[in-house]
Length: 293
Picture (cartoon, rainbow, N blue to C red):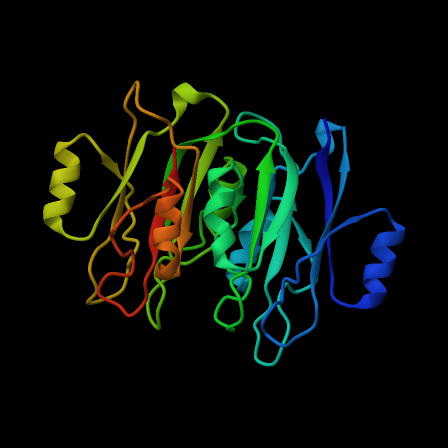
């Protein structure tokens, strides 16, 4: 079986020619589409050595996000995924891990239009939630991965500071690299999850509460809550993630965040569950949690 063993990014024609000469494969979708900036491409190499297989891809869009990745041994591709006037740098990181929470990646893809997203998630692809054109306009750009085995979500958590990032990465958690606390104030808040290939360990449902009444209802139904308010901003609604594991129910295979509410109907049409609770309740942004069984 072939695994993704190396990834690279090109930001000009000279680098494209160099990577071609090194037998890299290009994903022929411009990561900077719609911004008017330089053409940026993602490249990869494959091999059959499982020990060299990449098991994690993460994105950082500020220096604090990068610190935990660096300390945990992730490798940064030191070329920004976005370019243009006023753009903040954004970087791709990768990691080769082993153990129960690490499953090799066997294929990579990129979508540059929202209409292709739901079908890919339905067909077993895993989406990096961070839009590579985040806050700079342009098209919605997402990197996608396909793993060598079916995986399931077995744990979820959330953080409102960067102090435990290194520990979370070392413990096998994946950070959903989009801030749920989007807006002008407050801490950066991120949802985290772990994957397993063991179906029996999987979570079977997720819910969101936006008030005390909903929280009480979820608790009465046997759900457990993460401890961090996903909308940690003074004066805004308190938003919490709840999870449950019921024997015999269908397991959760993937989860992600949707920042464009216009594509919610397409996700639902493709059998993806989108929780109809805005994680930015009380603020001007729309953000929804989606998951696939």
